[in-house]
Length: 517
Image (tube, rainbow, N blue to C red):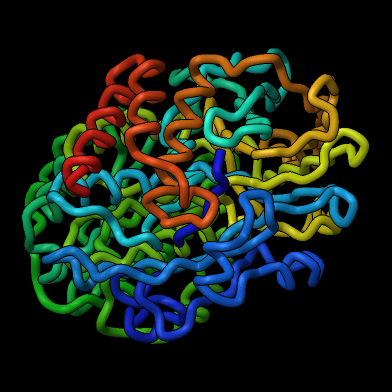
């Protein structure tokens, strides 16, 4: 594929978030986290100017950060972060690729909202792995294990002479009746910035969907914050559904945005209601804008990490366009060991929250790390598509104190690599390993599988190839500089099935119309 680049609590003044600025425009772009722990030889190959980038061959190990484009009308206070780009890496110099698993999808739905409003997103809004993982893969459920691993691949449809390799993992499934009791605390932003279409009212509709899925053993507490935070509903059994829904329906917008106080009250409530062995989770619904209270991002994120170590996790669900802080919402969920998703419609709310009870809520594995060991005799070079801000140092793969991703029951995770093989007839390219803390046994486990490819890509993988190339083009990736949306459309149309995939096809068509091609 043409390789990809990456785009990039609770209560910080957005203007003070380091490396974060409106619509991806930064005075100083942050260095890619994917560069941490890698040798200097990768960075020394970075082009020094736009001219040198244009002259660089496709298989150079260049790393490009695109110039930000002007924000679309009405979205000039959208906050994103650029995490850099994964380069091609020579296996002779580093044959290990290590990263944390990620199930976030916010980048895809934010992009969809831009396009529905008639604009392409800023490049920094696009994170390729969140596009790829928006589409659940049809991996078989593991039998008697926490995870199953699937590996496949074949000739890349977007890079002559390259192979596209897919690594997929599937978590064990848990029937709804076997799910653990859930003690949920909704922390809801009711500040003035939420008094817009598709914000607070959509939050209320979304939470009703979630409440409708709860069981009698579950509880719900509600905290709101505007200028100050306050408790609206103490933990209440889901048997009292009418009481919970009444509290949600009565929410009204008010005041400034003291997210720090709201989150602190929410975590304190969750700590009081804590039950060991149950699901203990805070669910933040917000546009990520904060203008009262704690002004240090590091202080808030550190507090959330402390609660996560106590097994009180945080999931964040974003709402709203025009002024929205994607960077903050994504970082909060990352530190809180939860999921980040962006809700742009009631249909998306139904999709996310009806899957939430067994997937998003019940964690089956913590600190999930994936490591691919490429065989230098078979592979010349490789590039991981996306996951730049999920980079893990190779030597930390077996360091069980290293924070990584969390996976829920039944969830799938997909990673795509573009590789240049030395011998196209080679069967085995290396090995893939997964290491994680098993939430049920509290033990660290590791499993592995050979890395092999086939003579051709499956239809499902061809569709994902189109999705990844689309993300690279929108992200203005150096590796997709010769890519076209028409090529993406042709491949996606010929392999799409089901409503989600057909919607993607429509999104590509709309993108073409916006570009005027």
